[in-house]
Image (cartoon, rainbow, N blue to C red):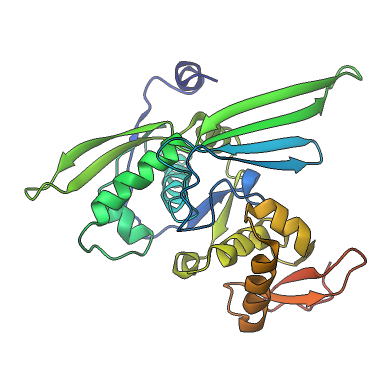
Length: 291
């Protein structure tokens, strides 16, 4: 769906959204929390590469542009815009604000604070580089859906970047990027505007303190599929959903994560399965037999 058609479905009074990070929770898009829409490595740029995830109803492809594939740490900026857009929409529904548009206008210092990063030298340039990678990383989803009125199976194809675009609005006296305008992709905007909060899940603020990319991915997977109870996933399936390139290293890191048992909200343990080792993810405070 084009930008024009999305905006016409809401209101002509839509305005840029920007809200203080204080007093509301971090949100993530529920739809893609069980696949990695980003690279997991800090070292491998993966420019021009494609990661494909084969799913039950189709597949998802993550395509990287010339600036490199967005990383799981770059994706923190997407979490910020999802969180702010969700809060802005909640205020609109309560009659306490205008309908938010697709334009998000934060200061770089607010981005760093939200993502719980320091404001040291070079950080503003890193934010700009992250925005380049987010803009250049395209998510293509191909799903086969059954028609409501017939037995025909329809092929549904969508392709959009992690952000639709950005521009620098101001710089400091020393030349550092100060304020940016980020355009929310229509798939995220439409999900939040149309689904009344059901398209997002709250993420623990300590997520941003997780150093390991695999640990971050496991947390998102647990939040999406275990929720308030438990979920079971085969090591091999998680590996295939993560985009990681070495299964042996993936298993080593996952078992270290299980031993440390310090993931926010969820307890992890391994058990044997018919097709290989399985990861059990249980909400802390819940009995392990919960369904």
